[in-house]
Amino acid sequence: MAKLKVAGLFAGIGGLELGLSQSGHRTMALCEIDPGASSVLSARFPRIPIHPDVVKLNVLPKGVNLLAAGFPCQDLSQAGLTVGIAGKRSGLVDEVFRIAEANDVPHLLLENVSFMLHLHRGEAMRYVVKRLEELGYRWAYRVIDSRAFGVPQRRERVYILASRTYDPAGTLFHEDCGEPEVSSHIGKACGFFWTEGIRGLGWAVDAVPTLKGGSTIGIPSPPAIWLPDGRIVTPDIRDAERLQGFAPGWTEPASSVGRATHRWKLVGNAVTVNAAAWVGSCLAHPDRTHSRKLVPLSPKDSWPRAACGGPGSQRHAVEVSSWPIHAPKRSLLDFLEFEPRLLSLKAVSGFLSRLESSTLRYPAEFLKALKLHRGKMSRLPVRAA
Image (tube, rainbow, N blue to C red; front, top):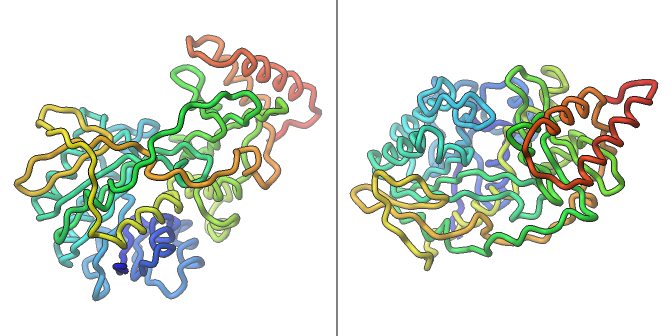
């Protein structure tokens, strides 16, 4: 088993690094500019040096052979600015390439939103793989759903492995269980985005939709959950941490730095620990091969959900699902350990108004439950949070 020495850039609250450490790899250095996130890293990764600014980081600790980076997604996210890879934040991926080249790092692990495959006709992925090839890396990427690893959160992210010493395709594609069939919502808790209602719902059966960093004006926006008993609630921050694979209370140190609501942003921007741990287990066995079907990619093709390539070689789409494994899971209803909050009257009323004026499809019982919830909330003497 190969144990790697890791430097984590844009480390956030340490999801990638924690997952990798659970698979036997060792974190040597972290880099994070957000004060709240840095306070979490200091508490949870004691004795690990934390550099505050990736732009000013030049030298990595001796022996680092994996650079891990969940580089900023704000410019690439469907819920964000969508200005593209040249944006002020997501463009910081160039710092990953600069540091990797300056320190001769043989392996890279990058993570970002799956929307980067489609935004501006895949410009971001085209740029990333071009730079990897220029630097001599063979690469493979795959869209992976966090639900595959036992957490009831539908969260699809692109994981990109790159190496100068071996072909990472076998590492990333050797396992595939296929996506499960869509189940009925009856008797199950269902998650949705209460901030939507016109273009989409983020509807998820027995799961919550993707936890987000918050609105563009910094307001936390945890998903809502329609419980089988008819209540419409939002999860406690500690359950949100658990939905990302962290221990409850993981982000508590951030409360001493800024507003308590900042914890929602930190959790929403994090990498799911369980998914990172699976990638880490793959990295521990770099000699694996795969038997997936490869389809040649032309420069005009749109980016598929999985692909591989390298310097001077043909790029290929790979037929593989976003579920490498089917880890044992608990239902969303059983998973929640902390008392959720009732969705406020203002929130449910706004959502209902948007939903009823849209052409979206949803169960009739869902609309009935929303109206009953609105009626109950309107009769409360004190508005629920």
